[in-house]
Amino acid sequence: MFFFVVGLEVRQEFAHGALRDTSRARLAVIAGVASVALPALVYVLVVGAAGAEGIEGWGAVVGTDTAFMLGALAIVGPRLSGQLRVFLLTLTVVDDFLAVSIIGIFYSEEIRIVPLLVALACLLALWLLGRSRQWSAAPYVLIVLGLWLATLSSGVHASLAGMIAGLLIPAYPTRRHKVVAARQLFRDFWQSPSASSARAVGRGLSRGVSVNERLHEYLRLPTALLAVPIFALANAGVDLRGGLLVDSLGSPVTWGVVAGLVLGKLLGIGLATLLAVRLGAGRLPEGVGMGSVFGGAALSGIGFTVSLLIIGLAFGTTSDLGRQATLGVFVAMVLACVLGWAIFKVAARRWGEETADLPMTLEPPVDPEVDHIRGPEDAQLTLVEFVDFECPFCAHATGSWEDLHERFGDDLRYVVRHLPHHPHGPIAARAAEAAANQGMFWPWLDFVFTRQHALERDNLVDYAVELGLDVETFTEDLDSAEVAKRVERDAASAADSGAHATPTFFVEGCRLLGSYDARTLTAMLESSRRGTRTQEIPA
Image (cartoon, rainbow, N blue to C red):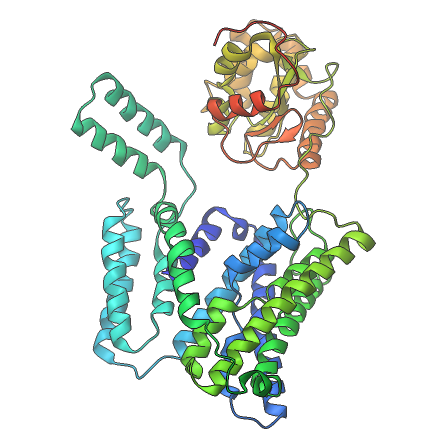
């Protein structure tokens, strides 16, 4: 189950995660390959130089335990480390895929042809199911179960099948028209509640989110709370009696595991990333420095789950070599955490890398002389939204203003800044500023957000006519350098504030993470309220 969930995460990263950025994906692949190759090489050199047995355990140092690594990052890493977390998660996706492939190729039992052919047929069925755009999760689950049973019988380790199956489960960004269709179905249920309309709502909601995301959501907690801990408890027991501790401290296998995980991961990820960035082969996420990369590389030396799995396959957990290698995994875990903590401290002190994330504070602050403000300029609460007039989610998120105004009244001022990133976004933003020059920004915003399907130049001029604007002045301003500079100011503000997508909200100058529905915005505004209300607002 663990590797199936990892495969789901890989597919999600390609669909709408960090791997969509070609430069970052390339850097992740380079770092991921190095994080597998160099640790294995270090292990082979340490064990081979001693002329000792146990060379077949090289696979124990190739994988990183993603859950433990991210947990350690939260404890010893920078105060804000969201972008570093994304980078490490992306490269461990590559790391895990290679580790699982190594398990399937080098640590599988005798291969049986007929079950293997059945497993391949299941993989083909998964691919065809995805191509048919099947939205229901049940057929995928049934085929994955068949695939797992067939792979177990074939002699190939089931982890490889789990990873590939996860990669074949469809993932795609949420589409606005699916959300709108689900809302209509819910409206039908609201007007005429029945079992059939309730089922229709459930199906509509499922269609709005990819099968991959739904399965990941269902399996993530059971995997983290049950599958991984049970596996760890079953494989982590090390009996130190009988002189094992003394024997392990003198064992090349123990030190091969320690050196491979601690030094191999640190140098593999750190140096490969540094060279790739210097040579222009990839770029780091914004806000992440090389000191933070080396700190994260050190934490990647936490092999635990994957390492214990391969040790069991290579040596058996009860053999002397198996117990020595397992002890090496635990020693490496402690050393990796201490080393990562030390590197993060040095990076913060010497290079100023106190965070490894996008900015969270609005820059520059709201200026009533420049910004577009709806509500009193001196209101107690401030909500800022970065919008793109072609963004299908902005039109509906911006519509939350009515709910928020009803709740907060004159206690709230609402500010809009531009972040054009859709094809017609730039010209639509300039048109809004041209309308603003005639005191019509807010009527223009409300009007155009209902006509997102038509944002060509001629359409925008027609809208100016319908709103009663001076068309000649409007067209001159639309092409003016002053208006273009005004839009560029907002785009620069978005970059300085960590806003990369629309809609992005700032509550009292702090970037909102996660959901942005009216209920969430209301709760965040209430929690940030300073003092008592400036007026009485009905509940």
